Length: 114
Image (cartoon, rainbow, N blue to C red):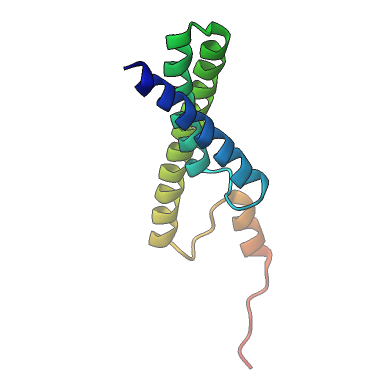
């Protein structure tokens, strides 16, 4: 069982360093894939740190896990909201979205067909 915890620790290290390198080199955007890799890596480090009694590492990785989890939840909520906005805009594609657009639309002279 101890070997499994060691493998988890090394897998977490590879995941987190690989994700960081991919974002730093421009191979990956800092989006949901990056946050998922961080979530996995922090879980693996929490398991490994707990086995070794490395409590500063455990606390740091619990914080890392929470940051990644909140980021993923916010991305998911934003994606849902933008999907709802896109659906609303598709149903009324010619209608202005805001009061400012109403004013601009009303002030714009109508195009004449010559």
